[in-house]
Structure formats: structure tokens, C-alpha cells
Length: 434
Image (cartoon, rainbow, N blue to C red):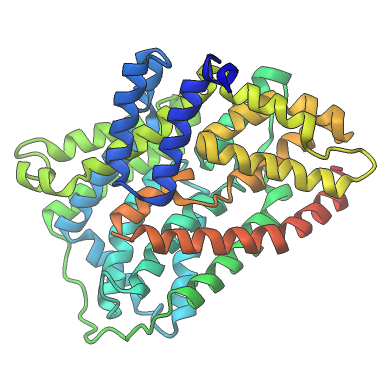
């Protein structure tokens, strides 16, 4: 026991485990747990300040912030209501159709917009307006289902599109940096979309309809939208420019976060912008921003301290990886990814897992590229909401209680691991990847 107490990783491990437990159980508000992590980690000097506060320098943090600002503007100018009127007339025939359409919109938008946070920021105000017109009241279970449809549809399904979320990009960069492997868009899409895109999307729709039942009403009035106001037109042009810059990132090289931040600054300018000081103060959820920064900082701290690498090496000694039992090895690799999800969250999993992929390849007999690809199922299926910051943001924007998000997380994870994982294994085999 005394040996462990004097081990250099004992204190970082203890601080990280306590932080994860507090987030997982919601024993304290998420933002307070994040602030406590910052404070204790700095006092204990478990990592340099640049690592502990790295979440604030992350693009994900600034996408969350700019998403809140743009969302306020979309609602205030009336653009959200206008979009809702155009869309909602054909969505209220049934609850399944309404949920399914929102999940489909969330997924489809991932093909043209690379940022999870940006997509959620644009979708949530529109979905809230659609719900209002369909008689779905905020704070009800039906509303929680619609908000979660945005969060889960945006994060989990977009994992099948290579440039559409942060973990995919981390994996791509790690694979290229460590092994010189360049992941390609279409082969990646073909490998993951049938099971983790289409089938998982159908499972998500079914679970939301079951766990969060609702009965949408036809809009009471079908008033034609009047001409767009000057502010609506100006904001539409701004959002069009933002979307164009997001889609063309590969051309100009400016990250989505910085495009979003520039748009947020324009939105806040006196006389030119759309939001007053008071609207900014009351509308931007600083608590969620701190929470996201804490999640990202914890992942960076785990990597920097060496805790992640040590855990990976320990796992190699106990996990059943055997070339003679390919399905067992496939399940074990997925399990390793899920375990890493607890420690470094989805954004950090690929950085840790990919560095160990060559060892996993030798132990399983699987091709190295296939071992790298197996992790997608694991990191795109969080067991707890805190593991995926986009889901956390969607829950915050929709004011969804932790219990509702946890329920859907666990239900979808169970369905994925029991039903979709065997199907994913079969699909890998059919494509000759294993």
C-alpha cells in the first residue's frame, strides 16, 4: 500500500478518478467539479498550468462559447421561428416522424458542417421553435427527447463521417503521425455508415420514442411568414458566410472555432450586432463552458502525466487478445476504447488508443488500419454524457436533466454493444478488414 502512496502517478490518478466520479454521479454541479479539478490539480502540481488549463485554449471551448452567442441571435431575430414554420408543417403527423426527422437533419448537416458544436448551436434554436409550434412544452419528457435527438444524432452518428467531429480528426492525425497512414473519406464512410450511421440512427429514433414519448400537435395557425426583417437578412448573410467558411476549411485553413468566434464578436458589436450586453450576460451559459474546458483539460492531463500510456500497457497483459479468436479480440478492443472513454473522454481516446494500435495489431493478428478503425464504435458510444462534450452542450442548451441524458446513454450503449457490435464485426469481415 505504501508503495502505491509514493508512486508518482498516485496523486494524479486519485484526482482524476474523483473528478470522473463526481461528473458521472452529478453529486456536484458539473461546472463546480471542473473548477475544483483546476484548483486541486494546480495546488497539487500534477501537471504544468498550460496542460491543466489547456481546455480554455481548445477550439472546442470556443465553439461552445460562439455557439451560445449565435444561438441567442438566431432566436432573437426570429430566424429560428421562420425556419420552424417552414419545417414543422410536415413533421407533426406522428412522434416517430418528428424525432426521426430531427435525427436525420442532425446527421445530414454533418456532411457539410465539420463542427459538432456549430451544428448543435444552429439546430437547437430551430428545434426549440419547432417543438413550440407542435405543442411540445420545454421541460417535459417529450422536449428532453427532442433535445437529446439533436445531441446524440449530432455526435454519435457523425463519427461515420471522417471530418465531421473532433475524435475522428484526432484519430486521423494520430494515425498519420505515428504510422504514416492517411485515412480516406469514402472508404471510411463505407466502412462505418451502414452499421454506426444508418442502423444506429434507427435504434436512436426507436429508443427516444420509447423513453421520451410525445404527441405533437398540428400548428394551430398556418400563417404565412411575412418578409424578412433587416436583422433577419443581415444575420442570414452572416450565418451563410460562417457556414461557407466551415465547409471550405480545407481551402483556407481557418478552424471552425475561430470562424465562429469572429462571427460571435460581430454579433456582439454595438449598433452593428444583434445582442445587447444584458442578453449576452443572461444567455451565455458560462457554467457549461467551464464544464467543457474541464473535460478537455482532464483528457490532456491524463496524457501528459503518462497515466494513459501506463494503463494501456497494463491492459495488454490482461485483455484477451488472441489471433485464434477474432470476435473475442474485436470485442476486447472495443472494450478497451470504452474504458479509455471513462478516463480521457471521447476527444482524448483516439490519441491514447492509436499510439497503442501497433501492439494491439500484433496481439490480435488484425491489420493495423483495421485495429485503428475498431475504436470508432467505442468512442462514439459514450456510457455517460460527460464522455462526449457535444452531448453535454445539447443537454445544457435544452435544459435536459442529467438523469434523462444518462438513461438514453446507457440504453443506446446496451443496444449498440449487444446488437450493433456483432453486426459491425460481420461488416468488417465482409469487407475483408479482419
